Length: 428
Ligand code: ATP
Ligand code: MG
Image (cartoon, rainbow, N blue to C red; front, side, top):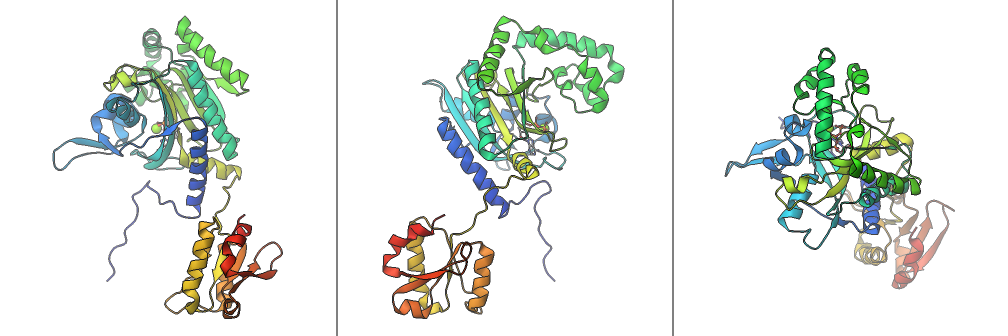
């Protein structure tokens, strides 16, 4: 009897080649772009104390209320959680290591996040975020820099179907005045509130404006708008952001109903959204969170950042028909006789050191197989050239180079001892 099959956990996906090649392509573009914007990589643990997220995200957020993977450490009873997002972890690390001591820091991360949600298109239980955070900077110039950074990423990926929505959440006192009027308004229409909204009416009414329930849309449209409660300083910050976006021809829509799910945001909030991914239309979301560093126990300092969902970005690229360049070897090495292997690997080693990507024909239990079957594998590999290590050519210290694509069939010989000289011609 064979043992029962093991499968991945629902909502947690294996990322296999060739799709993993698209991930690497995207990550490569992100690394290059972050370097050009002087954002430095940070890597924090996947498991954090549960309390970090309770304090950092707020108790009445979807994440903390119902989406966290939490467990007790078997040895010391500590409450732990798989990170549902990375901003809280970044802020903890920044505080713990006094990273703002010498001034602001620009950081970015990439990695898996975990939320116990109902798996569906664009919504998984292990998903991946790329995020950028600028800590210690108060002005709208950094908010704009972050938005321009995301915009540059869309350009370099070839992503066209996203649009930018922005809003300002003002400051706490402004939100409190708005909140009182909002609650009064919602209480007057209590009969139209769904269960979630009724529960949030007094704990987090701003989040009601973010509802996805179609039956509540008209109620929400008519609600008092936070933006009408902002004072001069908040409005100036918002205007500063808009002036930079305008000067850079970044199109945006002011969406007064844009509020983030997380409680620590203030002033600028923004989202890049698309209509092409169904209900999971937010590709990238961010904003200012000047209150978080103090909340987590650091010396209060302003901060702003965004996070994008890698799965959603890649899904949108696929939807648009933009494919990452496929990963194909430059060369497939054909080896008729196993005796030649030591020499073959020495040559391939030199090619690889020179930057040529080489797939070697490897032996199976039955041996290396016929030339015909080796050429078939060379075709499947997508390589542009075959290098044939046949006995005849090896006898004269040479190898045959055969073109598999443009001018297919053309072949000529190369001197093995001069591999460093002809290696470069095999690169794309
Ligand atoms: P949503 O409203 O879609 O639930 P959110 O407000 O919970 O999103 P954030 O916490 O702001 O999302 O996370 C930033 C981004 O991470 C989202 O815009 C989205 O692209 C991605 N994301 C969030 N949750 C998931 C998930 N469960 N699966 C895949 N991507 C996700
Ligand atoms: Mg969510």
